[in-house]
Length: 242
Image (tube, rainbow, N blue to C red; front, side):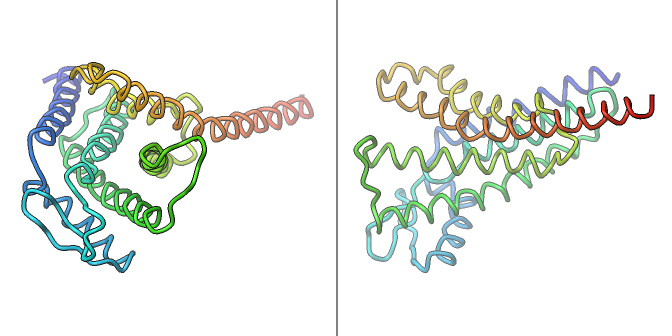
């Protein structure tokens, strides 16, 4: 098998895994998601001090019956997104060399760990917002909840990208998590006909498009400024020694 054929097969496998998990998530309930809901609930209990118990076909209900960690709170979409980010980065970095198939389970494992942490943070913030609601003339409660989720999930995705790249990352490469986030949160739902829901979907799409841009633009500007400063310093040094 040539490098190109193997690379194509690995890319196909990564995409197939992501689509299979997406399909599984869309056709299952909380009873079959305890592999991710359980650890997230345990971490949430540990950090928030709230206790939860599992109720079949519903999810993990708080002891005061005011908060439910349901299937929609599992964070599977973020798991898919972070898995794609880690796997695609490995494939792109090693596109001219042979890459062991072990990168796929490794990407899945670290994506799972990242999802547990990110989802725990998101739910803990949601619990605090339940205790201390934010009053806004611009956003209703559902919109605030959506805003919080996007900030936490994209923030963790971008942080994962930074941690796994470090100083090697170019300005253009910093757009990779944005592209993958848009693909999983907008591209896949559009292909599945989510646009038929009308205004509800397009309102969600507006949040998904704008909020990550607001978060990433300051980082990009800082990166561009840092690169410009380095280039200026190098040019001055060359002029001095020329």
